[in-house]
Length: 444
Image (cartoon, rainbow, N blue to C red; front, top):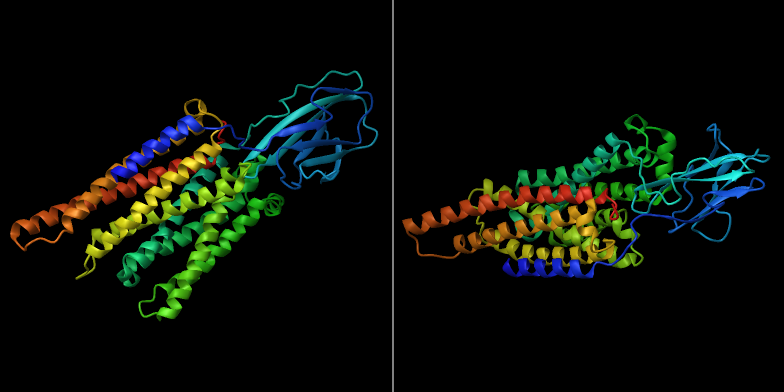
């Protein structure tokens, strides 16, 4: 673990020295008419060009006059061959006056971006505009809090499911342990429940509505039309397959041929679950999306295997099964944990380098401070894990049978149990920071 701490320190320095500018959310590149334009006659349509292709999002552009009356007609559409350009037609025969264009787009990472710009027909006054590139989300506070909580519970569910790797690779006896099986079922249930919650919350979250709008059929339909909604449905289907697979995979008397088949299917469905998280977060805003999404997959997958294994290890250390030998269990997991920690550190550094807007944003933005807190939490986790590793080595080293040796082993196992519990609690805190990071724009 000392090497892992040194690696983390090196990568943190690399992050500080190598942070490069990046764009987090969709932006308005240009508009027609432009913000503040004065026209002699009303245009047939209003169009905006975005920084990324989001597809057609119904109701994302509205035009109103000074009285708040709608001046547009018909749905949002693509007026030409440019996929990033969207438009809405204006009513014919609009009178002279000032008009406000309101836009609200859901970025590729599922976060809303809102703003306004204004134009004048004739010689009238220009209505006050909020700016054509406003990044204010305008999200209802209660909806934002519930959404963040749901994301944290979703991560917790994935971590509990990640304990399946521990069961399969480190503790085969856990297949017959009802407590271990219960944790895996809870994980699948949490992921399924939070996926449904995310789907119904996305509409109010993007539209700036309150919790009463969660079952608004129009908002649900809007969520279903965008990539985020489709990926949530894919996640729900994948975790449903995994939940059906778990009882079969965990049968102690399962033939080896079927066990291999079920394990392969579990890997595929688990990958799909992880992919739906990586494909709906900040990594998809990276111009080189493959690099960031791949790094996020490795990062989240390694966290799930490590933290999920810690939870299962804490369970069997708290109340081991009768006559169960924990020596091979702890030894195998120690090797897996070392690899997972290295993967977390490397992939986390790649993600930060690709997503952080600039070096000063590490200490001048909320996102940067959360990244630093997550790094600090991870460093503390590694320090505690180092203590666990020493306890494992001492307690599992063969020694001549004696009363003193028995007391030493018992004390070391007690220290191991305490360290693992602390690791699990710290992992929960780090997951909470990760949930906050997903709802915080890197530029803010």
